[in-house]
Length: 371
Image (tube, rainbow, N blue to C red):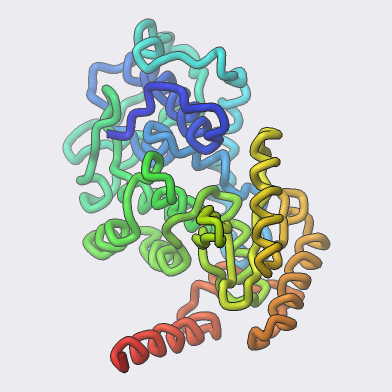
């Protein structure tokens, strides 16, 4: 269902990343399964990896203001990250020429029980079964609601996308959970694993579980149609600094009929924000051509890069520039925050952000009824 057996086309960066992650986890989970006669059910990060979602590659390891007041949560996630990194450093970096098919990975698995040459793997222990005692494997006994929904990926059994999302909620930071959720409902239909409605329905059906409140907060901030984890992080930072919420992957068409997508946009004020990732030179040409075309039609486009977002001084300056442009364009001032809010604060339905959003939606509904 979620297998990516063949390498993607050149330039498909996110698909290549997913293919690489899945190949790694096919190999690692194959090694784990070969060490026991029990049919394992992989969960948490392992389930996501089998689906090609590299959660640890995008997680914000260093806590910032978004996570103040969550010390126990931070320690739990830090321990999980450390456990994965301690074993992951023994795995050499995979390059395109080194990647093999799923069949190659399970043909001759390493069945040595003396060592684990892979990151920490997570498996579920169904009710009535005993834990497997394997080095490099962590067993989880979860409530039936979080363990009942499983899927098959290749020859493996693992938690569903919705279940894996909820399983990670108890130990990961809220901001990372939002980024993960956006990745599961991304714009690329070949990489999307579920939908926002399906995630919401699953959380509602699970009853009480560790991390349920955080799942609700994350669902409030998640948006369908995002292209990359860094775009999700950029959007969260914009909200934390008090900027209005932008549209995600806004579609526009120029007079010649050419269609463009802006990562983040305020169409009513013709202001766009783009995240400039590590692309090939050909993609740089396409990006600059797109930016030039947008500006020729009255759009003002701001470009953000990784270093600008990770550096607090540059990040604050960037957000001030976008806010200033919005004010000049006629946007109602929402108040720039030099000290950004936490992710939990922007997810709180009582904040100004959500009161404004509620008024906007009510206005849209009344306008529709009037027509």
